[in-house]
Amino acid sequence: MAGTESRLYRTVRLIRRFEERAIELVRDGTIVGGIHPYLGQEAIAAGTCAALRPGDVITSTHRGHGHVLAKGADPSRTMAELAGRSTGLNRGRGGSMHAADFSLGILGANAIVGAAVPIATGAAWAARRAGLDRVAVTYFGDGAVSQGVVLETFNLAALWRLPVVFVCENNGFATTTRFADAQAGTVTGRAAAFGIPASTVDASDPQVVLREARTAVERARSGGGPSLLECVAYRFDAHHTWEHAARPRYRTDEEVAAGTARDPVEIQGARLDPGERARIDAEIEDRLERAVRFARESPDPDPAGALDHLYATATPARAGV
Image (cartoon, rainbow, N blue to C red; front, side, top):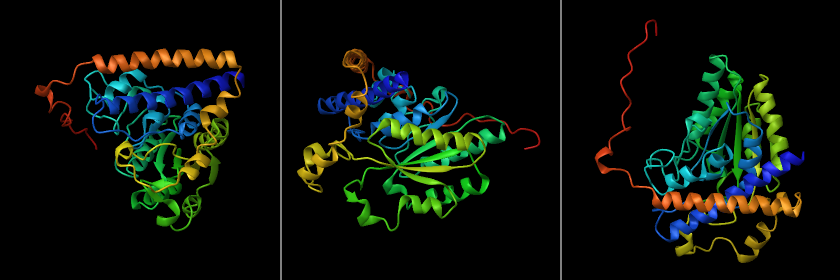
């Protein structure tokens, strides 16, 4: 358990400081276009990815840096990707909302609401067809639960009992619209309609998320079919960094103070010896300082290669297909 506590803390702390450093790079112009900060939701990525094996796969969202880091992506190459540099995970072509690393099972973030859900489910179907012992996890926000493609995917996954775990990150807002103002019913109720086991999880505690994720992943791996985890968190920062300048008023200071009172980094950090926590913090600061320097010093992509990797290479048809 002690090892698990340290690993979870290392992950949530890495994500927290990565996002804070990325916001700094948005402000100084190194990252162009802004980001969707993951602050406050770190326990979801940390807990779910800790339940996975290296060969398992994930798909992510526009708010996906935490998932990518928790699955093992290199912080330096991830930061370079956000900055659009040629040394990034995807040579600067993916940016903040489309980072991927197939070698780590990160099949990509996706800026289209709910669009990554069928991709992960397709990967789960393909793995089962190939006889692979692999689980797919897909993340999506509360704003995606009424997207038709998400509900259609629930149906298919349940019908075929696919090894996929649906993780709804319910931070209470779809951009600036409250969940209750835009969605009828409940997140878990949508899953129940398709016979998919679903639970609501306190996503401020990394260990609670890990416990629930392990149950869902084991169910999927053993042939029990899909599950849904509604991970209820509070988004500490803006929907997007444009809010830092525009300052829309859709929640009060009192609400933010109450919502941020349960901090996943502090909750997990309190479980560690203070000396160990300080050592991990120092290691992460050094790692992220190197990541920021790497991103800033890396070259921009060569405009002459702008069309490279844009079109798929022609693949000859296989006999009998």
